[in-house]
Length: 261
Ligand SMILES: O=C(O)CCC(=O)C(=O)O
Ligand SMILES: [Fe+2]
Image 1 (cartoon, rainbow, N blue to C red):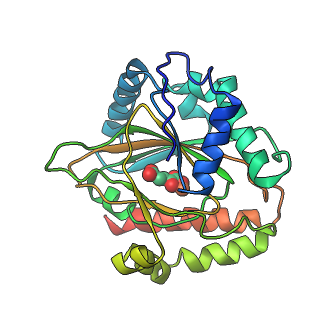
Image 2: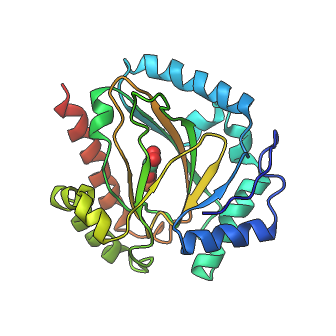
Image 3: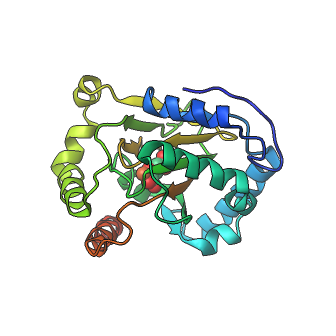
């Protein structure tokens, strides 16, 4: 894991080519590259207040928000819009794919794990639909009587699938309930060299989301764990098969929500 360190209020202005190179080799080798101390305490504090207010509106239960609306009203917006952040994601994509990204669009989402619904959204191993994933921890449980909900991953388990249809079929198999039972088992994690990645607010964690099978470990229902995810570079974005996998993902979320009622 990479350990470059800087403290900045204006995020990611000072990411050099060498930093990106180091991130890239850490992502290829260990599985995760880290930019340390790049989100200031004040941004983190304000983002936590934002999360707590939104969680009240969701009755203390898991929720996630996607798209441009939530990020525009969240304190992470400056980071999201910064040139440095765009440049890192784009350069990483280009290194991985040896090609320009299909668009400059970053897909922002926020997850807030809490309550019994939060438990159901844990250990849901998946591949992202995007080549590069940047994860920003906002709130991570740290009391000794809590579970921190570490990120777990099987780094670079596969290559990027060039054909959308192959990707969709593979995702359906790997992310089936039988598949997910297997990935969460200790012996499969040991056999396949899973990495458990503790998350520290202030840092940004980069990995190849489309290649690494990953999930978060569970937290106690009383705890709150929140992460922001920035997905970048969907090589299948123009494929007609895309809507099938989107519908499948939405159906899974609806099923999980219905099971707690
Ligand atoms: O919250 C996390 O630790 C991981 C979430 C994730 O992988 C995703 O939303 O794609
Ligand atoms: Fe993911």
